[in-house]
Structure formats: structure tokens, C-alpha cells
Length: 565
Image (cartoon, rainbow, N blue to C red; front, top):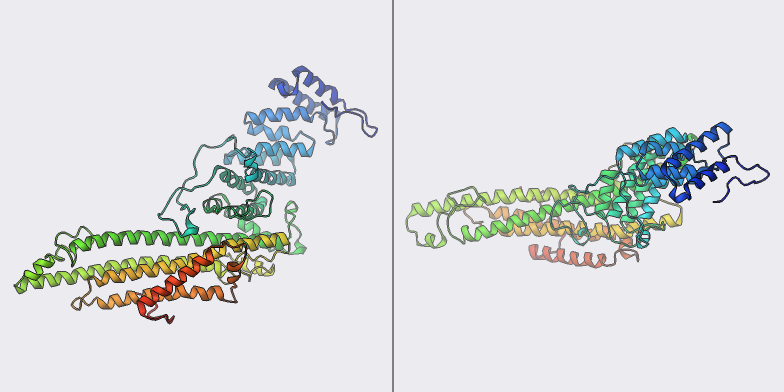
């Protein structure tokens, strides 16, 4: 091995050189040094350093101590690694060894122990922060597409709990193309993305590190949406909505945003509250807004999926009910109502029996049953309309919070809006953060180009498909409406509500063309999803056709905006 004790600049060789040489000689080579000898050699080096009073600049013997640290890491000795790593004098080696150890630790309690012992034995909060940040960076880069292509990035699973990531967040791989055809599913997140996500809690252990956790989360979120300026980004890749939701909803400490806000609202005269972060308050304001923008987008996606799941459910119920009506309704035979309408007396006679009946009492009983059947049908349709309307309004509002972010100030806590205004990023649109750096500015522009066209299409789809559902509900009511039961007025109410929703769908075109929102810029840009302008035009044409068929006119004047009562 290289003799670290060689004379340099007139200094005498270190007395530790013979010790480390003897250790390697006894073991035969560094690679086969026995654990007992590793421990003895490390203790001897540490003891002689204390006795001889050597400075921390003397790195002689570091390789002996490092060998024992590797042994402790391999045997998962969480309580000892920090102690012995602190006796490695070379800063780069010390950082590299502890990062190598930390990036494989998964258990939350073990992670807490790692940080606590590092603070205790390293005695330097700045150094611990740098090691923790490097750990998160290393995990992200080792699990990047380029690293995976080179065969890297596979987790060893040391100290890891063997569990799958499951839950009630809906899988959203198909959401961009029009929603998922179902409800709750287990999260579909790749093992490499899970590794990156699970690295973020490292920065949530120490309160002063939490702001960096948010910044690192923003970097990951950009990657999950195929945008990034770092070398390990996957530009133009598919969306990973499940991974984004897993990160934001389960792995990022909720209090981290409070730390970001605290740093963002400090003035220059306050100084940097934590020098290791080395970021101006205005930059923290941008981090704050960016994360709130991501939260708004993911919230809009959740609301969109809940609306879609509700619509699928109601359409299935309607299909089943229509199948029943054909058999037992006005056009079918008698019998029990099979739970759809709790009315045993409804339609006791078939259409043929009604035509053959001659006594007034029989016909009257049938008329009463028909009226009650129609009223029960209306109650059911009205209840479904209210449920669909609630989800439609929630989805519409959530999507508009993204498109109109500068006004809606989605989910901003007290004082956050003022902080953003002070940094000149508060009154601007979604993901407009006012970055001065060209690369960062280009990144946010690309995020807008990739995401906003999808939100526009989602918004129009919510309105178009809800209007179509109302139209089908009106057709269903027509099947049981008559002058006797007075349901024609209800049918008209539903048709008016459907027409109003189609009118709102057509107004999405005005929103896109508005100079205030300038959404047409993201639809026309080269970096946007190329097919979304065509999808939107097709849907707008369908909305116009539906409105024309329903009312005979394309007037956008609203009628009875409250919908069916």
C-alpha cells in the first residue's frame, strides 16, 4: 500500500506507519484481514493518535479504521458505525463511508439512531447535513435510468422491512388518457422509484433539514413527470402519478412546509438560519410555491379520479336498472321489483293484461302503481344526479385551482401568500416561479407544457361526460313519465341541467383563449403533449353536438343553474 507516512514538506514520517503496515502484514492482505485483527488494529490506531496527540490532518491509519467500519456495516452494527467512522480523519473518506452505510438503512428507528449518533460523534451539524444530503442524492442517482442501464441501483435491502407499498391511493397510469376504469387499487410504484422516495425521510429527522427535504421532493416530482435539468433525469418519460402521490402523501413530513415557509419569510438582515442550506429566502419562496403547485395538481388528479369512479358506478347502476325496467316496467311483465324500487304494487299487470282488462278497479290500481313507480324512479334519479353533481363540482373546482392558481392560492397556509408576493412569485400562475436561472426557468416552462394541457382536457371531459350522464338520466325518466304522474316537468329540469353543463364545457374554449390565463401558449408550444390540442378540439365538437341535439341551438346562456331539485 501507499505509505501515508512518507515525508512531505519536511515533516517526519508518522509513527503510525509501522502500526498499519504491521496490521496488513499480519492479515496477509487488506482483503482477508480477520475481524478480530481489524478491531485490534482500529483500536490501536485510535489509542496511539490520542497518546501521541496527532492532529486531525494526519490520515495515517485511516485505512485500518475504514476496514473495521466496513466490517461493522456488513454486520449491521448501527450503534457502532458512527463512533468508528468519526475516527477517520480524511473528510472525504469519512463522508463516503457513512453515506455508504446510511443509504442502505431503511428502518425508521435505525435511521434516527444513525443521525443521533452522527451528531454525537462527529460534533458538527453541518457535516451531518452534508452527509445526509449526499445520501439522498446518491440514492436518487444510483436508481436513475442511466444507472439502471449500467446495472446499478439495486437495493441490498440491509435493515429493510419486507413489505409492499399498498393503500387507498388510486393507480393512475391511465389517467392521462381519460381516467381509470375503476376505483381503489394498490399503488403501482417501481422498486427503484420506491428507493428514491424512501430516501426523503432521511431529511425529515432533523428539524433544520426539513426544508431541504421539500426541495429534494420537488426534484423527484419533476423526474416523475419526465422533467428535470439534472443528469439523472428522465426527460420526456411517462408520468408516474402513483410514485408522486406516494411521496407527497406518505413520505414527506407534513411539518416540512412550515420549515420552508420559516426560511422563506426571513429577510436578508436576519442572515441564513442554517448556513449549510446556503439558499436565499427568495429561493425558499420558490421551493414553497413549487411544492404547493404540485400538491394542487395531485389534488386535482384525485378529484378527477373520484368523479370518474363515481360516474362509472352510476352508469353501471343505470344499466342494471334499465335491464330491470325492460322486464318489469311499462314495457314488461309484472313481479317483484328486485330491490330497485321498493314498491311491491308497482306494475302488477303486464302491458297485455292492461289492454285486456275491462273493470275500472283493476285499471285504477294499475294507474296508481304506475304513478308510484314513476315517483320512486324520480327519487332514485334525483339522488344519483345530486351525487354526480357533487363530484363534478369538486373535480371542476380542483382542476380550476391549477389553471387559476394565481387567484385560487390553493391550500396556502396563513402568511404563505404574502411570503410568495414578497419573493415576486405569488401572483403568477401554476409553476411560474420567476426563476432567474435559464435552465431552471426552462424546466418550469416544460412542466407547464407537459401538465397544463392534460388538466385542460380533464376539465372538459368532466363537463362533457357529466352532461352526457344527465342526458341519459332524462331519457330514462321519459320512459316512466306521463301526464298522469306529472314527471314531464322533472324530465325538463334534467335536460336543462344537462344543457347548462354542455354550455360550461364549451366555455373551456374561452378559458384557453383568454389573455389573462394564456393557456393557449402551453397548447401551442413544441414541448407540450402534441395530441392534447386535437383531443380538446374533438371533445369541444362533441359538446357542441350534444348541446345542439338537446336544445336545437348553440346559445351559451344558462338556464336554471341550480339543476334538478
